[in-house]
Amino acid sequence: MELSRLLPAGAPASVAEIIDELGLWDRPSPAPERARVMLNMISTADGRATLAGRSGPLSDSADRELFHGLRSAVDAVLVGAGTVRAERYGRIIPDASRRELRRSRGLSEEPLACIVSGRLALEPDLPLLTEPAARVAILTASAASLPATAAQVEYVRAERGGRLDLPAALAELRERFALHSVLCEGGPHLAFQLLDAGLLDELFLSLSPLLAGGEPSGGEALRILAGDELEPPAELELLGALRSDSHLFLRYGVLSRARVSRETIDSSSLAR
Image (cartoon, rainbow, N blue to C red):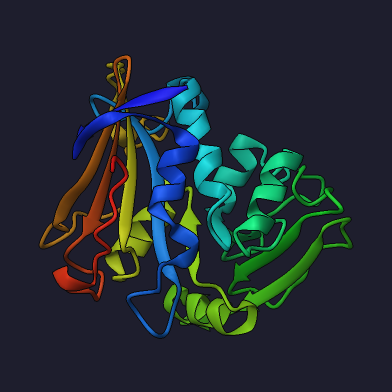
């Protein structure tokens, strides 16, 4: 599968070539106290992040290939508990060839699966937790623990005012697990919290050629961010653009709220 390069322009490239050019595993964090945090989301042309509560119906084969390609290039995958439940998360890298590719990049065979669950509202029978090869870190404000699971589970407990202190949790993740790159896969509430706290450095956004309608206040019709209005809005800089049929794949640098300057944004492009 090859994607057309729109920005910067160039010859079509495979997903493997594009991920290699990004070199996410070699890029330093722009903030010394935490890893580089990237958000990977998909939406319809009118902004819906899910259909019937799931993101899968918005995706195509190219989006799925990029989804797994990004996973193969980072130290950790960060996801909210609601998304883990809705999407029934299993092993992060199920394909043996991708695990071998990670080893060749100097990465662990499996990225650390980081679940944000402020109240530890997780069912122990979730596929990810029943996977013996899974390495899981649960970011929580709760002092409780889950029943014993097949997965290797550790806890990052960071509480402030009865709620999860997300900046402190990410700082502890970096220190304890030597993380340099974290890929967040949502959901919209966690994406908003990262952006609002100035913890987000880049956005990978897949635009699905669909119009779905619906009101965000209805619960199911979420956009890629769910929360209060940002004041001022976060500013983005387009770093790369790809196309597969009518799907667009955009990479943005986050210029405001993330504590980085223009000079610290790596010049490599999603579409280079």
